[in-house]
Length: 220
Image (cartoon, rainbow, N blue to C red; front, side, top):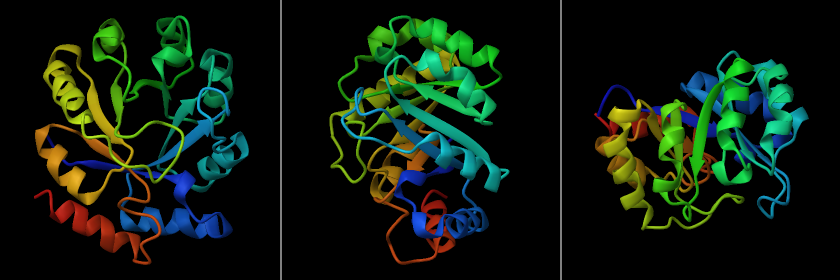
């Protein structure tokens, strides 16, 4: 493994009846960043978090905030997310006719650009884009819903991306069924970080600090 593995909390899985307490508990537990899923009901069939959720979480933490856009035509909203204080903006390359233009706009707006690779997307189709993004988020499930079953054919996609990362200078991250077993399997292969949802972090009726400490201990 190259350095310490990073963990981001998937906030669509948090307890919204006690959101401020959730943020504080995650910070105290040592979470590295907060992951916000924005969905439009069109690119994916679900509706995700909204701009007001993002604004509240951004105002409540000094940690990094990253936004995963599961929406059509994300270029229309780049400036809005920049004004909301987003640090990293993920887009699906197939959600925009000219993804390279959207990436340029993300950079111009002062955010870090990142790509998401869904299970059905071929890595070969995005090679040129890898020159200009800092991170590639591989979905272990189809995007749009939490709690799905991991798709085992993703392993080959991850291994192929790890072979490419030194040439193109990007990080490989994982999202979707980031279970302890998958984390402990893929982190040693070169996955730099994981988005944690219900498979590892939320809904366990255990302190977040205890869970994160166990995940990190298993990677030493």
